[in-house]
Length: 161
Image (cartoon, rainbow, N blue to C red; front, side, top):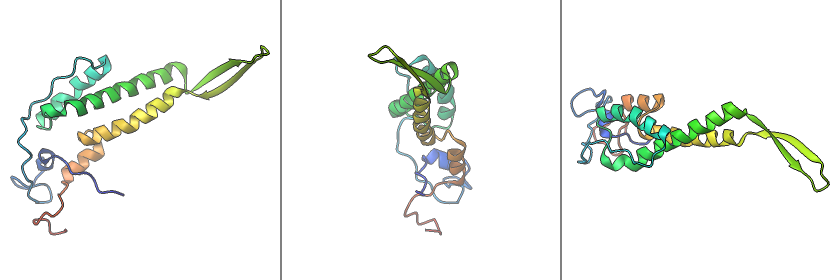
């Protein structure tokens, strides 16, 4: 299993043992000097994506996790959420299994049941969404890794390296 990806410095400092140290007592280098201003949502976001943007941005901004340069990643997360919601709504309306029909050249009709294509869309969006959530620390496991601290490689203050 691959090691968890490094977390932003601000997340690593949340439960630090001392100023400038993470929960494992390791020094946390300051993040790049980006202006920590949440990006404005693009005008082209779907209604559901805009609602998700309004839901998550305030919390991420309070933690100083967002910068204007995160607009593309955050837009992708929100639109993936909107795709997932749309697919789930279709599955709820049409069912997990849908009926297909075709008429042969001789006029006979064939009917068969198949998995609703919206199920596959929801499954794919769910996987992508999970990855985006991990990037922003929006899942319980991502949050748990943040609170444990994720030390960087070649950290001279880490006695376990």
